[in-house]
Image (tube, rainbow, N blue to C red):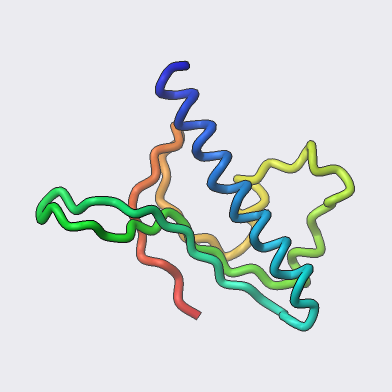
Length: 106
């Protein structure tokens, strides 16, 4: 598997995980009206050698907007496009390389 395919799989995986977490939270907390989700990896600062959290994406989702997703046909939902309809902060190249961001604050 070449590097481009691996990055695409990783990109899709990160976005799908975010969607799943949001879905679980809305399902388990029916009175919640909005969610702020930020995803990060543990990285290493190349300048200092210290470990640091590197945020990959941050998204705010309102329950009313969330209801617009047709979960009756999950096979046709593109996780990237689904998250892009919300307040999304992400710095990613077209080939799926994530760059660190500042997470969104409520």
